[in-house]
Amino acid sequence: MKCGIDFARFTWDGGASALGSTAAEAIRLADEAGFSTIAAMDHFFQIEMVGKYTEPMLDGYTFLGFAAGLTKSAKLQLMVTGVTYRHPGLLAKIVTTLDVLSGGRAILGIGAAWNEQEHLALGVPFPATSERYERLDECLAICTQMWSDDTGPYTGTHYQLTETLNSPTNVTGPPEIMIGGMGPKKTLRLAARHAQAVNWFPIGKEGFEALKVTLAKHCETEGTDVDAIRLTLMTFPPGDNLDGWLADMEMYRGLGVDEIYLAPPSNTPIADIEMFAAEVLPRVASM
Image (cartoon, rainbow, N blue to C red; front, side, top):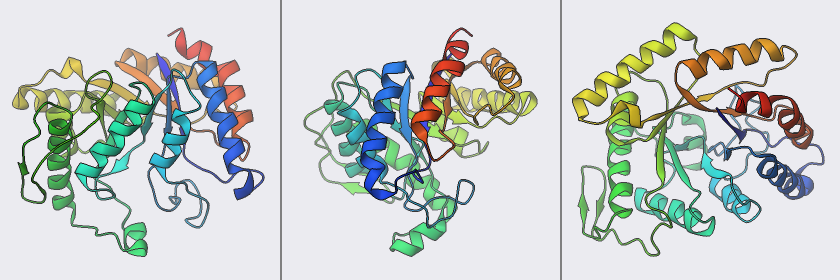
């Protein structure tokens, strides 16, 4: 099983003046240690389950562009971008640029967005839930078209593009699309339609199995292959009970999870990643 690093907080020792150097060292270390993915959150403000909304939050795609120049093998993605944050044509261009500059290592992680506060604070439109899912469906159709040979127009309910030109094109084919979220009616239906990977939370064996059944039903309806969709897990640092945490990860591996993501939890991310690399990564890789 693979293990990625998700940078979910930037409240680090040294403050803003040290963010660049700390991020650079942490990113290089994660890549050299063999972590499969370098990820970051996509929010304007910090989210309440991680810290105060006034705490530092870096722009996700700028962070990934920075990471692209510092890494050689790790995949690069956001966990996950909100569909409302960027126009689909611009988003496709951004992910393509990341893919080209990293030598084909970009993944599009995306979801329907949920944080109303940060939208209102910065004046970004925040449509109703049903419309956000409609926009997510159209956004993924636009990205897929822009990552193909079809440069023609796109006409949808919410987006109209007269020309889906995307030059340069991606290095090794279309980036993988990962949809984050566990909503059984809409999120998993769109995952069945568009995605090559999903990202879920550790909700226990019974709940996880139920999600898999629902995803398979949606794939049957959409005419897609559920076995072609990777299952990934956003987990929590093991803390003082590493063996218990590893047993949980072994259980999720048995449920088909292909990759897990760990977020450095402290104000010293370099030390966190060093600990993950020494104590966690070898045992996860052996599963």
